[in-house]
Image (cartoon, rainbow, N blue to C red):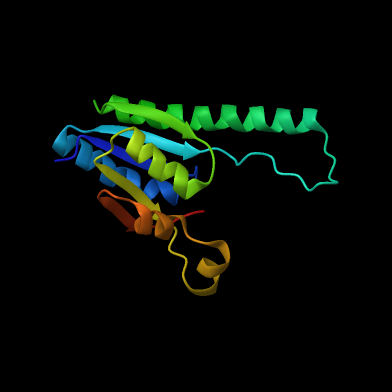
Length: 149
């Protein structure tokens, strides 16, 4: 049924709440898991804004290394359970990056956790899960996470 499962993460424990579900599905269907993170958006400056590019580039490189390390540790956990796993880092607007990755990787399922915000905070901050839900053209497993941030 499912051969490729795309798992969007953001590095938080709340987002990782989907992982036990993905592990079980992967073992049941012998599916490949793609652990996916969208990197920080491109640098956007006001027309008169000045920044120290060397500090920006150092920070970006550090974030990239931390993201790669994070994904590698999760990849090891899945591999230790004989689950085929791949990691992927995307760029751009988060919802679009998730949808594009699902299409590009031919994912049969997108599995992710919702941070469970509602009301005004959802309106103010937006909702990645809601955005994916309204735009995705394939099955979506969405669980509500209530754990750590």
